[in-house]
Image 1 (spheres, rainbow over the protein chains, first blue to last red):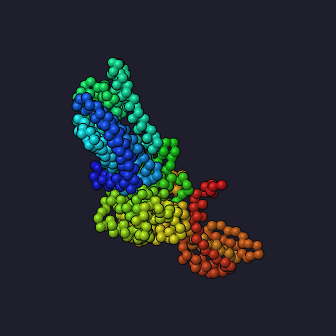
Image 2 (cartoon, one colour):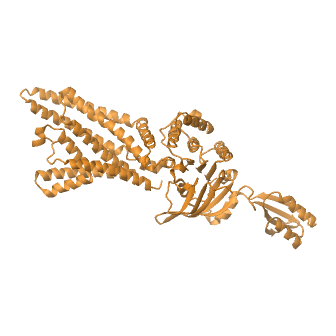
Length: 281
Length: 312
């Protein structure tokens, strides 16, 4: 049975580490730079829009939505990188250096070590995501007086994508070396990205084989499907139906894929627990 | 005899084809300082890890503090200093001890008091606020020792505790081990430094190729005292009397130009020395010289391990 106190002790150490090793500071500086750049770009984009005197309010909303999704797409990419890199050596590194020997010889379950590290990293990732996504939405709101629709449905899906990759990265660390773990996590992300592209093309060309390839890729790694569904949620109904923007999926992943992804993350954490329990330290 | 605080039976660990520990059976008594000796690759560290639940045995069984190996409740009552103590070096010494204390379930004023006491004991109070990455190797070892004692353990496992320490640091570790013994805490000491082991341990086990091949007490060990006698001619009856006082260990001629014959024997303790002298005098055997010396642990180590273990 899990000891919440032990889980929190490990999570607290992870948070402490993120602050003390200036991981949060570095992420904040990079995030602030990204938001500044996004704000400047949006400022000039909106200035161009305002020059178009004949633009209909719906057209303006579609363009602003596309700009917002471009910002969220970049946010999504940064979060994916962070989700993989942040915890990639948290277990493998400490196993390799022997740090974990001293911790695991204490009266703490190995499962609590994994769960504590997972929780600590989730909190860091969530803070980073809130800063970036919140920043993008705030900038668009301030400069363009616009907020995309259904962000309450879209943003959690983006966060779930981060959770999937973070859980995978932690799980891999219980059995693999840091480098192998990183390559595997990014490899699967790349597979999902390409698989989704193939699926979109397959749907557009009405090619079932290509569509199935994409679906299988999404089952192997549901990250890209989550972004596609999140982006679909956060679009005006018009572009949801007719597409036409770079962020309008032709084939929208089903709600079942969201459940699959949630289960995927849970199984990954379970694998991490099992992996560390069986590991000779 | 007190019940063993640690006991293993035919413990074995195999990594793929490689057998790290073959058949380890040993026991440690409460309050005993126990030395675990062997050459590199003898399986000492793997054995230690099995006792701590860090490595699962392939076969055999063991109990620590009356519970199966790796038992969580038992782990709350043991301390461990790994051979190459590593920790998140961005923490300060005090923060690191607080973290480990929390893992032991400690907290509040009690934890703070223990941290202060142990930092003082390992002479690190002045450096307690500094990140561990700024510590010297010896300071790392000392703060590691402090974390192993946070819970007032019933048994402490020390893997090469004096590695990297200067002579004063070694003396401090030796004193701490003596204090632990005085408090009734058992110490399981894994060390290559035979002098340290000799100065601190009550009993040692020699491990060779994953097996415990020899066990001996370092205090009052029978046969540890070697006596060399240079005497005049001795009758068989006198030799038989000597054999009752100790174990005869051969004869040889003395150096050129010296009288008599050299007889060697091993005796359990110094109390036998006057008896030997009395026996010889009463038998009217000329006693020219009598030397007694303890056999060093190093000599025992070489004898038990065999000359083939010597590199080169």
